[in-house]
Length: 501
Image (cartoon, rainbow, N blue to C red; front, side):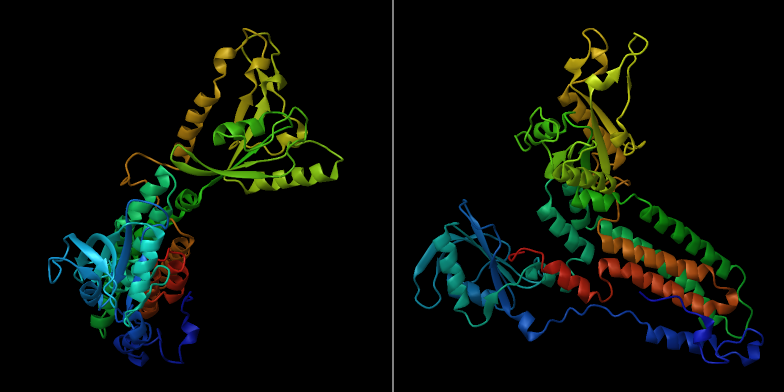
């Protein structure tokens, strides 16, 4: 991350606010700095190795009705002529063609299927693309992949290489690439909505709007530098630029102060179940999992270690941890489990304390109950802690049953509470949808905010330095969508894709 500029870093007499006649030309200094800090755009030109035609199975391996083998690159049409036999001599782009797939050297029939040719740049990768829709038998897939390997201009694709070519071709930006991967990995309705929004370009549009506003602010400052030499600073222009920058700062801060909703929704809410022994924590986990995931016995201290499960609650991905019952103990193994439980509670996004209704007290004889948490539990209960009163059958008959609901009702209410906490609505395009879904988004926005702060801290006499701070802010936002060079991010991102994507 670039740091804020300081006046001390410039040679003597580079900027002299005491005398305009001795000061170096704003325009000359501005031109020099601008050339040194010009944004480096990602080049769409690929090397010869990258330009070779690639192929891969784009559907999951295994038995199914159809498998798709994807081919992309400058020789995709040649692959058609060597492997595809149909009534058409040349393919009609973007239309399915019934065909036979043959071996390019022996002419042996490999399968009977469908083929479709996508003429670049109107394809996913912006290159010529051929898709072979074949039967998904393992032997058929292997024979066709082996046949492709016999063509000298073809090679197997690397993980994420199809999507990487789409990125280099300008089809996708980094936020759309991340959204596409998140969409493939989505396991809950909430994850699907957020990922679909990013993959569709909505996230890109918001970041681009933010960057455009920074550039508009910068253009006003640059106008003063380019056209204000030898004259007084044009009245009101610099103040207008500062007002715009202040609004931008507030906008970025509103994105940053989101309680990490987007990141949590993408990776999962960490929920820890805790409470005293035999309160019903493991039974609750088994209910949520709809299977016997945890051992349940009437013996206190049965659960010794943390047991984790990933579940979908109300469309929100939740990683639930069942923990050891919190109590004083001299058993060294149980003591380790209790300490791990405390650490899990502190690290959790949400904590759920399970209390047995047998611990409730009815002091006034009316329909009002109180609970005294054991000392080992009370210290970990906060205003944000959810509390579940379990084992309602232990209440005295006729006293307050209407205040206690079944587990199904609890689950429905808990799901609504999670949806409210993370502002998950039924509208995928809601303005409340989180903008930041990856940690790197937050890092770059925090950098942009710091550079805007540095601009606001400069005076009109240091206008050239202020312009540089705004330029750095625009570059920081540009790194989110990949408008400038972020090769280190690309390498880490694409290698996590599946081979055929």
